[in-house]
Image 1 (spheres, helix red, strand yellow):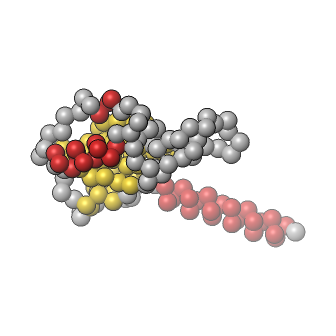
Image 2 (tube, rainbow, N blue to C red; image 1 turned 30 degrees about the horizontal axis):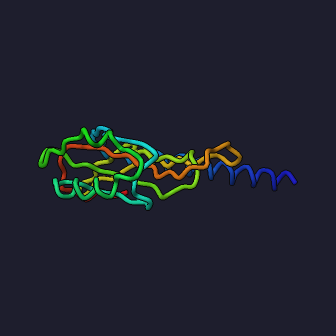
Length: 151
């Protein structure tokens, strides 16, 4: 019986350590500074996606997809400066309740690409939620880059 308990505890400790190590930032990799442009629950995009926007045409195309029946006035004041910034938008799938969210926490600068560290929030089991369709998003801007951006 003691052996089973010790084995179970060992497995649990190994799982906790593995999870902790996998959440640590990569060694020797710098992060990229960015600024949040908009973050919220209601967009016109109902699928999980990553949009990398480098031109005025891409910005206009993105806005046409992004605008929904809900008013997203925060983007009306954003001016796109072509050649100065790269905008990155991440979206989450459509949800039937509140309690979901998405956030870009860090951007890691690897030699050939940038890697987004994304946190997705999901509601707890048994939480009291409002029955309302949500489509979480986070839009950021960073210095202009031509590197591939990976989710």
